[in-house]
Length: 111
Picture 1 (tube, rainbow, N blue to C red):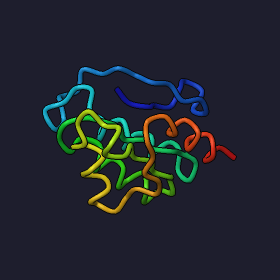
Picture 2 (tube, rainbow, N blue to C red; picture 1 turned 30 degrees about the horizontal axis):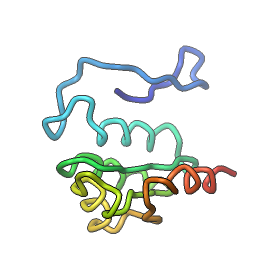
Picture 3 (cartoon, one colour; picture 1 turned 90 degrees about the vertical axis):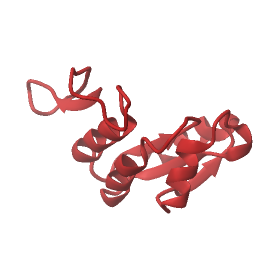
Picture 4 (cartoon, helix red, strand yellow; picture 1 turned 60 degrees about the vertical axis):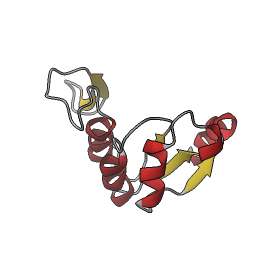
């Protein structure tokens, strides 16, 4: 799954692809996040939540480089802290929040 330009070149759509898995995942968070970083430079928010492994961290690095705000779910509200932990350890996270506060944190990034 990725974000692509629409036929008019201005709108963006989500496209489900048959591209190969990344990080043994399909859909892959890294794949999605990189596409968001490309199409929404300086105006995106990345959120990484409970999950196993490191999928998402590399894509969040690209998003962060392109001006995104990154939010991670905190350890105590995760079922599996793997994915958020990898992003936190990579120093790409701006906000660490419990599950019940993530929507509020997302809303605070909207200008």
